[in-house]
Length: 239
Ligand SMILES: [Zn+2]
Ligand SMILES: [Zn+2]
Image (cartoon, rainbow, N blue to C red; front, side):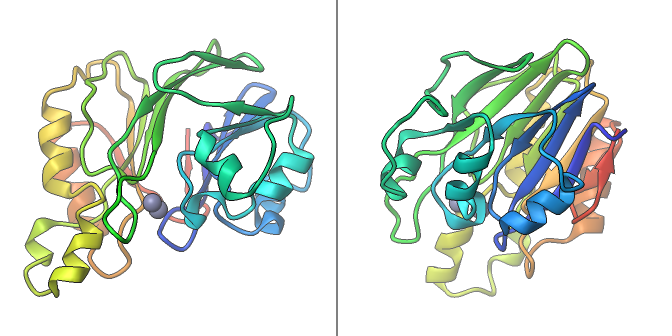
């Protein structure tokens, strides 16, 4: 059984399933609910909940359906406000560095750096996820920079949206949208400062459709780190 399954990973919709023994945790719900169910083989048995990073639709499109049908949903407060939901027993408000237990997963949210289309700051959380069966997974997306350093992470799911080489040709307003995301160059500088001695896989997520270069990003991250690197495309499975 795969440890990580990708259902979608781009600005048109993000969703990932993490499987640890009998338990499943869904990361993001930015695709149709039907597609999420299909990815779960039409059964939410074993699903302990869903973690959502931030309020952009490519990450939270199916929030209301998920809130109805999943046992727990972990979200920044802004998502409840966006969907005009009262906080309930099902929703857990995630806050920077406040540990959350969900099934046998323990989840540490941490602040990421992201902006809205108008340039205002967008509250966005990454998650460090631990489970006795699978070890630690780091999940961080839609963040132009990460202020925290990590170690002892078994699997990394991290944004690699574009390369700075490809920005020159764009208009300033287009460049600004990219600058709220992680570039290949920033990711490389970031990974250089982490202790990756326990890391078994790196999966590059949320690549830009037009300015991402999957083969190059994979090659450059693999040669920098020496760790098997994958590009998150629909139906990718990492074990
Ligand atoms: Zn996004
Ligand atoms: Zn976003």
